[in-house]
Image (cartoon, rainbow, N blue to C red; front, side, top):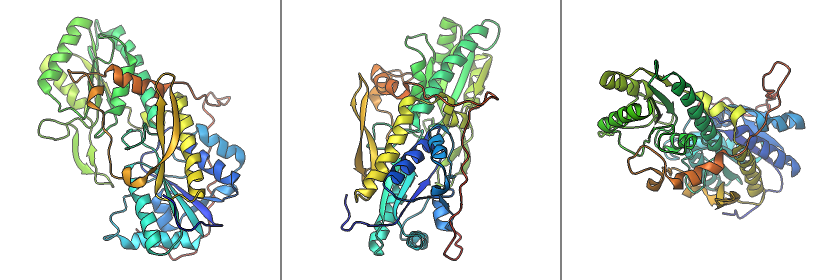
Length: 423
């Protein structure tokens, strides 16, 4: 939507939120490059929304053009991220008012929040409060999440690269298991991220294209975990193939609705902390079937593996950052640039604005027609959706030491103007 008035000057504030990805810095580069092209100075919040609350701002104009360009191939969050959820305006109004005070003090007229569902909700609330408090601010949500669970957008920047990492890791580990299965490991279990949505687990299915190809079982959080069916499928696979690869989403639940990997704690967003589903499944395989097993938990590796990033993902990440600035400067407010697929073959996509109200607090799960009838694999429809997202490589510059040349920014601090504030 458009606002009634349009800022004629001011600065843009960009912040990163939640778990970072292999390509979130490409989005930052898209933001900064585009803003610079329009003569707009960009501040970044140190450690996400906490930096905005604490008035810990970074002046990106101190960074060279080469440093910003290097963000396109550097993983992690260049300005720091956080898991901190702003609650409702009614219960935490002081925090929202503090944000407006910081924005006003530094003449920030555009706020871009790069994150998932919770970040979209925060950007929407700040846009609403700015209007209520008479402060002229444009708030744009910028999509990012490896979980691929944002509504409206066809896919989420960050997902394509973790999908590629997962598919490649499944293929490579399975070749290892197949080599040793006669006298060693019979069952390999790979646990991947995905608390409520099985998109990452589904991507493992791209590793094989026939019935006996790995992964032989994919466990989705969209399905209730059936222990008997799981064990029967593993046993039948080992007897037929000689070994079995299982890919499990961290968020699978039993019939009572409990996470198999429930650790009993919660993170800053109120989400259950999961303690590892792979060892739980491995124990079942050992106790009930007696097979030798190995399990792996890639954890941060899957979302930080820039060396295996998808070219499609890297390009989309930059594009949403560029579009976010264009929308902000075009006087749009409370919107998010989303990816719209226009063709599967050849794969084509474009960026369009979507209202934050249609993204915030909505969750996109795997469609039922993406999961095979037995519940353990992906369908042809899922392959058509997933395959383009892992296409292409995004090469890195390497140094003489054989390691990637990643950039570390100066992150020069902007002098504070307000009293300290503790969230």
